[in-house]
Length: 154
Image (cartoon, rainbow, N blue to C red; front, side):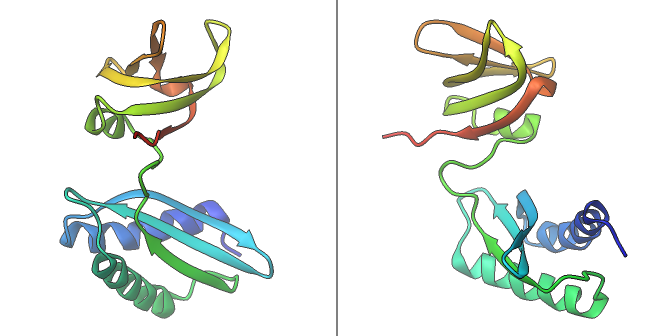
């Protein structure tokens, strides 16, 4: 039986060439149990935004390959969508791309006695993110980030 980590790695190796051909980036991926079935969620993005046609095409092409390869032991549902306005920030490049936008960061260990930071992304350098909160500017090492996402802005 193949492990969940191996499943994700194999899906990613199949998916990345499909996305590359369409100039689409993989924003996030999750494979989780949901009742009696599992759900494979693929979040994609590109400059100018993702369309329903993009999601449909990636779903169709990935689904076809996954059906042929048939390495997932669980019954599952494949979902392909946009990461949305409050998308996850996972890589240094995500923080660079969304410089100037509001975000929420949760750290693994406390920094200045806090685990949670909200503010505008000011700068990204030396594997650190600098965000401007309401009162202070915080510098957070990317390796210390447990999760981060964009905040909805009015």
